[in-house]
Image 1 (cartoon, rainbow, N blue to C red):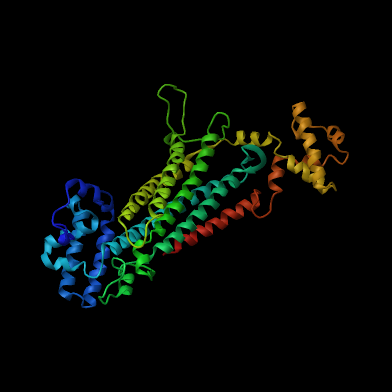
Image 2: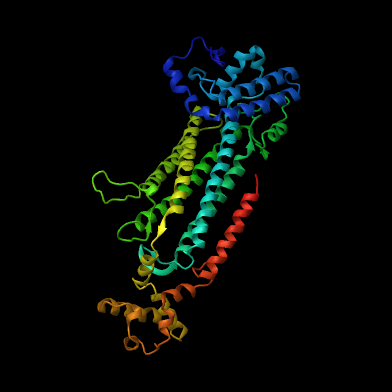
Length: 463
């Protein structure tokens, strides 16, 4: 008979057991479930809700079950439905009726809410460490490429010259925000729901603060109905994962373009590329493409849980069993993607000459030519029009702005003189942009140092 079977006159059939069971996926929370139960039973003994000797025996046996699971000596039973019932069933088999006292003063509703919060806290810490490692790798790449000039793009058209460092550091800024979002998710996950019962707490004199401290939570839920029916923290986690994957996907898209014959900006290491079964010359950026593809999965997990939760009345409903698979799948995706991506970018090689030549083409110094006119007394809108005419002339003559004679410049505007050539040199175009947020070597080096301090601060912090 099921542990909840007193109300029923017959057993569920095998199909119902299989359909209803969640042990196939929630068994990964065995450690959190047991640690939560240990904290709960210690509190029951401390509060004299159950005899102290019973509390100690249950605690000891739970620790033995934990050890047996970790040593591979336990098989979970689908008929016991979920990880919570599996652990409790094992406990009762080992110590008999005393084991039945464990569930005093709690429900599976607040138990599962506790487990998923504890599990997610651990995983967020791991993901944050992976994000931090990626940021450090990118920051080091930036340090090595403060003078590696490349074209910056808008609308995928060459726009203005920047450096590889400047481009890479844009992704570091994105990842900083991802890291901060994970911090925020952790903060709202780190609230202890146990003691909420099924939805209306209990008449037992529980010490929820004791359990909170035992399990290293920062706060206690303040409304029992919200505590058992809230999955905002899961949705917020999936949202943070989706944004993180979006950033990785954007970077992968650029690496796919940059490694193509048309760009020839980077060479992806052989360890992170594959060949063709028919075309012997091919080197495909498959890892980058897979990461880009897996982004859609994570978006799907977010929308799946949003859809599950959108029509559920208070408080707990069985629909909420569907919360764990999207969360677990997102965790598995993120924790597999980040190490691969980090090593892929760490080992790739930049083709610096190709990047520089690309920056010299496409009139990426046109804005600097317009700025030269402004500095020489021409209103910006007039300067913009003058350079537009110069660019059109260059296109017709198959020349670059650097290749025009001063006479050709003066035909468009008499304001021009020989000093314009210095201002439109690609290197000068980059170095002149020395404002906060700009691509100059001076500012970029300063930013990488700021980032190093930021990373060190993150490593010394603890939750």
